[in-house]
Image (cartoon, rainbow, N blue to C red):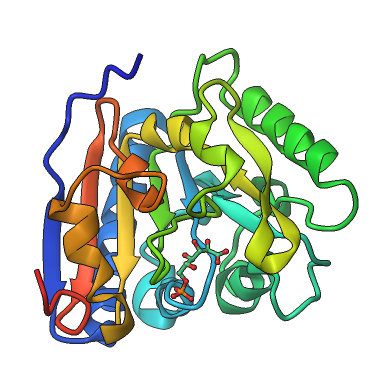
Length: 248
Ligand code: 6PG
């Protein structure tokens, strides 16, 4: 039974996608430094897709990179496509090109999901990696998880009508997505909901119809999986541009 305390989401609306990316990068730097101060390290799970690329580029840029002590940052992934890391669809590739290969991050601090091969085994391997990092915790306690939202209301690789939506115990699963005729590796909703902070970064008019349903509509997570994201005790922020927020 979920014990989430229904934290009301904080909704931040900015003029455009560049302003969203800049504000998100600023927030990530502040959170990284606060976590380093408080407990000596910062664990972040990256979102895939196209929207976060600009955030990652900014974090690796002159304006931001030297404001973070990267050796204390541990980078994980929220989901991955079942392709090799060199593939154009690989979330790892996108993150590597825009951030991981450009920021002074120790290689061993980067925890990529394996996209190639047996998806079920790869999901289990990644859960083992997380359980080792979060050392005996009952759920992973990421300092920050970044999420995007698809125009169908999916987040991470939690797609409408898929099996992973009902997962209650696993941290990571291989989720079969019929529209892609492929598995995706993804954190589960309970694993995401145990993060200290969750940040959705959503831009563009293509998302404007779905957002009111997610944030204020009927509860229907089977069709609107982003509704499954309700922090157990952490904070939930939505970083939106005017175009995405136009119908809120
Ligand atoms: C993925 C993502 C996915 C993404 C949304 C939004 O691997 O595709 O993790 O959940 O965040 O599909 O994608 P865009 O940012 O490209 O709109």
